[in-house]
Image 1 (tube, rainbow, N blue to C red):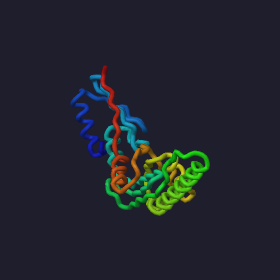
Image 2 (cartoon, one colour):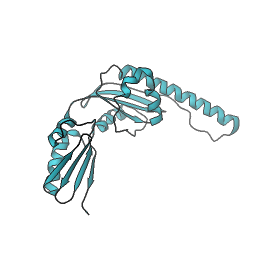
Image 3 (tube, rainbow, N blue to C red):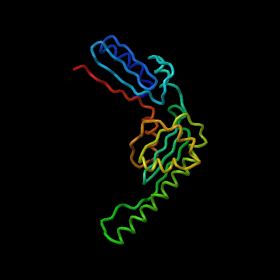
Image 4 (spheres, one colour):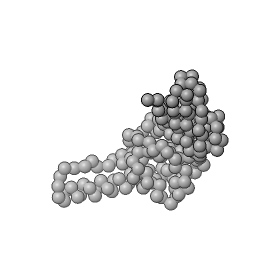
Length: 199
């Protein structure tokens, strides 16, 4: 759910389920209704400092400089969002050899070539992260794609400050193209609500 819809959703939750009480903690928000229904939200980009319903709404609506880093063997993308607006980005792709059924020396040669291609792809992704994300004065960084690939990129010493900004969610994405990167910016801001209905 888009952050802009949260206030209306919470009002509707009360209209559907009756009087609501709130348990607001720095990293978790719980709304409990009189009919036994419960809605739980992991505070995005927490911790939350104003431990109230209105504090949560203000927190999710705050405009942040959000970085998105997507890396897979076949491609990479880096973007900087100011609120909902993409202000800087770069996507790219690298060919990485598929697996082979051949055995023996041939299989080993393909495996070495594939590993070398993957290293080149991750190196290209690292350079893009250094150029796009490192100087962007980000408030938060959300990553996606392949976890090992992301870890490899963020190991670069030039990105050490970015590692401190990484927040969930970790986004599952196909090979990053421009549209994939733009959608990742939307998904990174989305509010995730876990609803429990009474038995």
